[in-house]
Amino acid sequence: MTSTAETGCTRRGFYWTNTSSSSWTPRIKALDAQYKAATVDDDGQALDQFHRLPGPDLWWWRRHPRILTGDLGRSLRSVGADGADPDTA
Image (cartoon, rainbow, N blue to C red):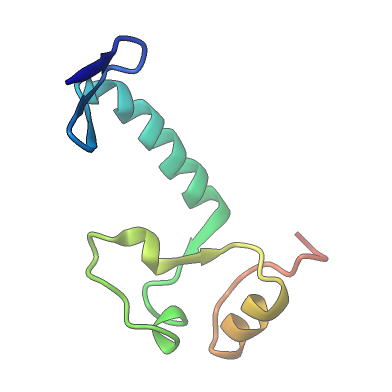
């Protein structure tokens, strides 16, 4: 078993185990907030036209970019997705 005091992780076999999970909570919450700010909740309206969405516990699969550009933007708009045009965002 290998341990790193800086990260609070312990290596057991091939896996790293976080021994101080409370230190990850603020980081994950900050990243979730950043992701939510850059995306729009689709609730399966447009995204479900392209792939089957997993259950509600995997909420990040139910969001698409706030600014719709390129092929992805055109495809999502074609099935009714709401999003900002890059020229007006």
